Length: 272
Image (cartoon, rainbow, N blue to C red):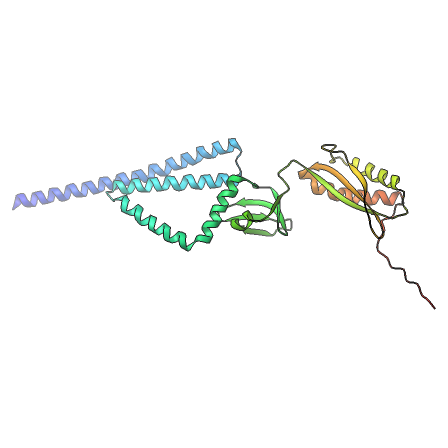
């Protein structure tokens, strides 16, 4: 009887010692894995900073690496505890399939977000237009693209919507052309008007001579005016500064040279 009790106690002691050993090893795997994950993320961030990858793509890669590392660490810890991961993986696979069916619209946004991140039709910081909205791209997440307009409206656009829409990217090229229409009265001297406008736009410090020099020509004959088209090139970042400056400078130059800008008017003739 004593021998039986002794054997039982020894087995229980060995069992408890084995459990504690496995538990301590599992905790050690979690702790070591956590710090290794932080080190991997730190090294990957440095590598991505050197390659100048877009901010949103950095965030996507960082989250992906973190999730993969955590999954590996958790599976390793469970294996150390003697828990079969085969059934666990099968359970999660079935659950993932059910979630995928329930969240098919969200998964569509995620798929489109991955396509946007890798195809790069626009990146963080670009100024874009889609539909009637214009603004700077602040962030591209897996579900939405965050756009900040000039009047500080934050627009969250589902990736499936923006990827299937016509998007105009104004920041993709370093230079951009400014087009301005200037209406002048029919009585004005054409050569004088061209000379005044051309000298005005050429004097602006942010106007470029490449890829084309400033251009001023008649573009249209309207009902009450001769319309001149003004085309100048500038850096994309300077577009709006040049646009508004030239509008003001042309108006001031025309006033100084007594060249009127016509406006719609109605002549009424009284017949007695």
